[in-house]
Image 1 (tube, one colour):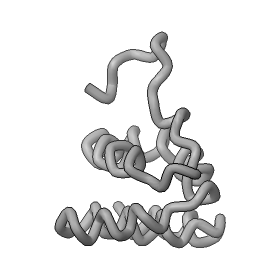
Image 2 (cartoon, rainbow, N blue to C red; image 1 turned 90 degrees about the vertical axis):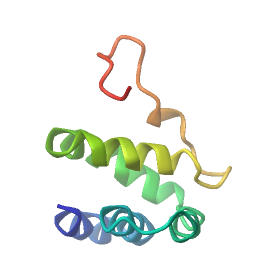
Image 3 (cartoon, helix red, strand yellow; image 1 turned 180 degrees about the vertical axis):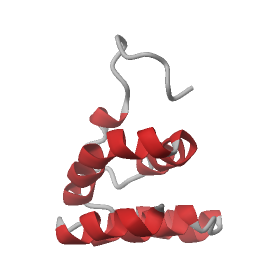
Length: 93
């Protein structure tokens, strides 16, 4: 599944997100994933927010892992939208 998601990321200019998703999908180690997270930009975050509903529909565990990883993104990257709205059913517990 991660390979199918890499194309939309790349075409939207979110190469760091594509790399991060690939690493999570292949179950890389924490250090490697942390390095990939450090490269995340605001453009990557905009892209992932557009893709998350589709990712969640296919693999809730992958979407949860992606949300968790992206919460560690650099401080200048907006992360508020990664948190679910209180009115949303608890899909991320």
